[in-house]
Length: 329
Image (tube, rainbow, N blue to C red; front, side, top):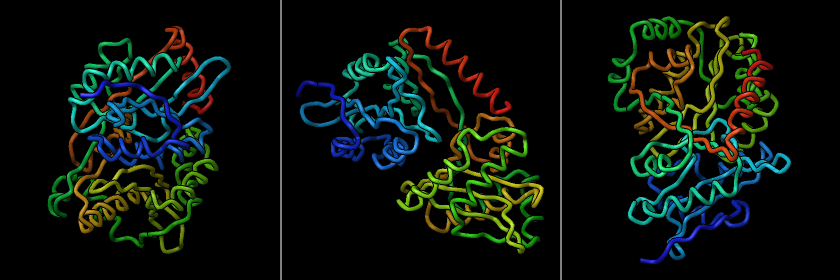
């Protein structure tokens, strides 16, 4: 079997290597595609780079790094509104399992700070545990979509009541709202609590417009008969899976508008042949309660962090607290 080697590539100039790995990876998703990573890099002013493990000439594992330089420091912060994009591995674990530490060492040498979101597998976790990475367990909820009856029976009783009441109102689904509509509703979800959104509304609008042009995102809005928007949702389709990527709501206009819209979209997803719905995180009180009402199962993913030197960990925590304070949290 050929020896392994590690190479750093640009996702702008050598994306054929990343696409080859993506096609053979067991954990590939829309969030690890070069199109998604390049769009992220463009909107958040980062350098789209990947560190790739090759066996011979074949890529068998890789870590995408959207790099940002701060003076002499090289950082790869978390990918915004993106999960499971931290590492790609070939379906055949024999090709990379023993050599995965080489890949991690190359990342550690290149960066002073790295944050990765990964799906926990035994082989990948073992490689990270053997090195001084910090591991944070996060939670998510996923729904299996088989039939409308099974979906409805999985709802909580209070959710069913809310949907019934909303169904008797004048709400309708707009299947093609503007990026501005979604961005403004997203912002309102934070502003009504006196909190600044993590991504400014204007930046989110531009990002949505680009994703919409690329055909990556599907946008929906629930509106009253007077045209006022009460809830929005942006979904990403990846094979049989739908990702609940972005949401917004304005409960004063319709208290159960967001519940009703998501129910309608789930029933349509079943009719279209989708089998899985991923809520993309259930770690925030209130939001996680909303998602739990739809049933499904709790799953885990991991946020991995690397710091060199370790004092950067404390500096990063301090910056995070300052950012939260500025947002009103």
